[in-house]
Length: 320
Image: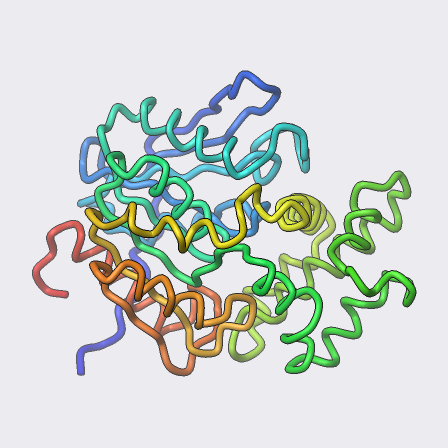
């Protein structure tokens, strides 16, 4: 068996800037790799998570010209933690603006977790603008998926961590935890807002890896990161991503002409493997990899291996 593939060396962007959306947001973007090489766009998770320097290393810098950007309200984009004009469809429009700015007709779209949701929404809206799709940790924002993570399901596997998630919410309001959290996250009480944000964010940070991984989870407990992450993620999830129930799987036929790969950890807690399997059935053209001994995070060795193999393969490398 060949050795597991891992990240490319650290690299700095060759170009950075801000995209003015015209409706109150400035989107931070950067391009890394080799200008004019195979175009790609990286869609981070959350929503509200922002991207980090490590994400540049998922692509061979000699073969890719990759655009990375902080979605509305998070990372270096402004205004910070803003929920105004911040929906799935606003982000789909931002991706199109960035593509036009990059001057490419179509590009590889890479998205994990919420990034897979956004990638599917974009690809089903603009299939002629997508050369390939690399998707990890499939999430389609159905009520069943949201309830599994934020009401009952994952709570059974992590009772200790679940207790900390419940702590900011009065017992009488626990019948709808997403709605109860929203009241705190958009409220005027700054102290309670930060407390709720860290509890919401910490729940995710500590349940995305198969085994505890402080290098992944620590940032979820930082005030600034948690505030944008929790406010924006809760905002999107309370509204079901502004998607009709089951929309992304129902429209998967629009991906029929697109090559792709679906990579999912067998023990992914936030995103049940059943959804990835359903997408695989609805989009048979895509290669499907259910990774044993892995949870949700892209950094887990088996998942990372397949992600790198996918970007290498779509860039025409013959050794993968």
